[in-house]
Length: 266
Image (tube, rainbow, N blue to C red; front, side, top):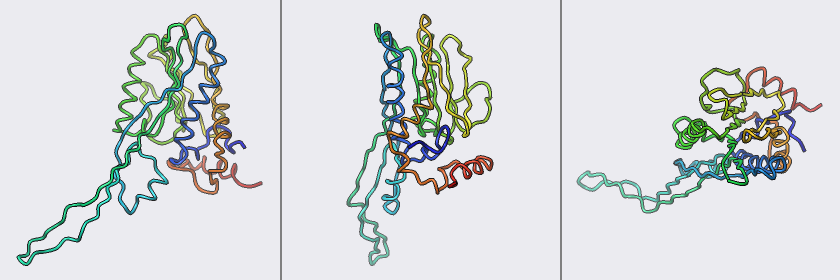
């Protein structure tokens, strides 16, 4: 079953679903591109591991494990006796007797296109995740450094897919029209200029030109078809409760009215 939304489904942005959606999207993009790329190129889905810390209190532990997926969840379980006072009035606070650390690395996937004969990296396709857009996060800083390395190279193209309304977007030198979703294409031969697709909630997702080496024509990436494939393969229609409000940030007043009409039973 298809999503009721014509393009990107904002309900897929909830933390319980995003990881599966993100990683499957990378695999689907790889599978979609390879028939166009053969035999001179191939697309590879590449994992990147990131680590961050989040302390979860015992009271919130069970709820947090269901609703959030931190890069590293550090859970302290402390079983201590209550503080007591000696006869002289000195307060004695006992030390913890038990602790538990749960490490949960987060795997983020990108798609990279290589020349088959030389395995030269030609095009990087990055699908932004919440940690890439979290100000001050190590994953964001690492991604921005990677982005800058690509921009500094003369031969590698970058396609940046942002299907998340929240967070801080990677910077561009010039302002672009306001939209909940964006795709940026930084063609190696055209930098510092880039092409930007601002995508409204009511829009279909674009068919993107994927650049290769100068001697070869672009190949198409049908982002709409890729997202629809992920939605169907992941059975997301069975996991989303469309009677609830979408995850934050909140939709605009106009978007709320449009989404309400879209989702209302006819």
